[in-house]
Image 1 (tube, rainbow, N blue to C red):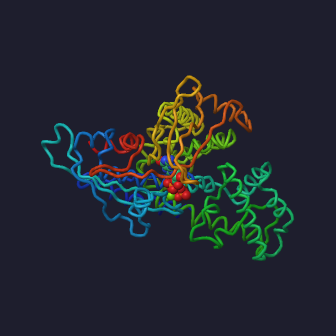
Image 2 (image 1 turned 60 degrees about the horizontal axis):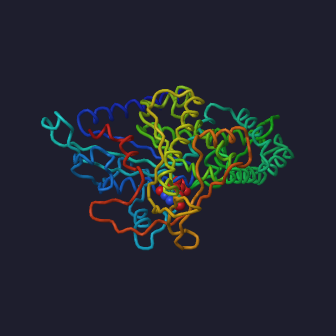
Image 3 (image 1 turned 90 degrees about the vertical axis):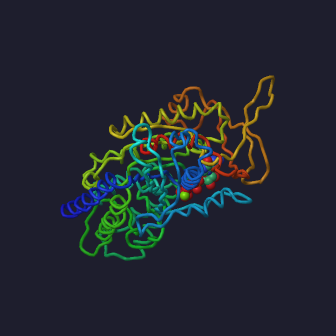
Length: 470
Ligand SMILES: Nc1nc2c(ncn2[C@@H]2O[C@H](COP(=O)(O)OP(=O)(O)OP(=O)(O)O)[C@@H](O)[C@H]2O)c(=O)[nH]1
Ligand SMILES: [Mg+2]
């Protein structure tokens, strides 16, 4: 373990030295991490961000763009040969082609390099010519971040923790019964191991669908190419004897293998090198699901923010060379709301972020909360209603394909009106319901020089990248 940590640190040191040299003498590289739980909007965000950086007509909030200092933008081969390329062209064609539709769900890490040729600002402009800034965008599932908690836990401690959490969750009933009746000190039988692990994975999946977010290990929800392999065929077990060759001994071994072969490589190869991070949150979806989902989202945000404070975790502090400098928490899909409600959504995100900072005892990176839509699928309209005017959004409904105008319900004036009942453990909103419609992407004809329509994507880009483009 000590040797592992040491060699990790050495590898990292050499690498960051390489990065520092290229930064000073050659061309700066920004590694921008994009994450969020599944369906949060990662793929749409990256696709629209890249398209709007290539064609900057809709990016007035990005100062380098509005000042005309970005002379060129182009996609380049990425530096990491073994990471799949983010399939930008396919996703963009889905979103903006004829018969536009949302891109398919993605399940693994992917990467894309976008390079900008930028003229420096002010005095420097006369002294040096334009320089090239590389932005390496890395897309990874937020579920994987929550696995960090496993790194400091033994199998016994993790089992105790996981089983006690499962105790109060009805979704775990079958798994609990199976784990209790299994004699784990008996000799390993592979079909028993598989049945236990499948039942554990089923419980995690159902819990996740019903709004719980702490459903680690993350790869049980998104197994990818590791499905069925021994590192994903384990489950927590009550304490007891673990003689050589027993089920319990083998489960502990596989748990350790999961940490060593799955969790550790992710943090070392992808996470440890990130400079800037955006965490996308489907806040409107959680609000629609009710107070329990909102409370869960609040806890998940603290958990995710805690990962960016590596001092707390010995494994992570050993491999991280430099700190993440900026973290943006963005509520996605703000085009479901009329713009008059956007400040309220932003206020909710800000309250959640403040809470997460307090809980994670977080200091260091600059943080910001925002409400955005990476691809605007609606237009706004107002209609007279009971003598007043009602603010609506109109779009093409995903399920029926019909155009409809719709009022999702008013978000409360102060975030506490949502967050307090959530914290008190209420099961439904007392004063109002928040609907979420699923809209299809709108048909757009993009003028030359314009990217896809969005809401505040330029502000998000300015926060994440602006200082590196001046
Ligand atoms: N109206 C609207 N809907 C959005 C927007 N972004 C994402 N969505 C919706 O959210 C869904 C998920 O978006 P993705 O970008 O695929 O989310 P993801 O985080 O990549 O999801 P996974 O790959 O499954 O983890 C889309 O299919 C859309 O229905 C947006 O800006 N506006
Ligand atoms: Mg995706």
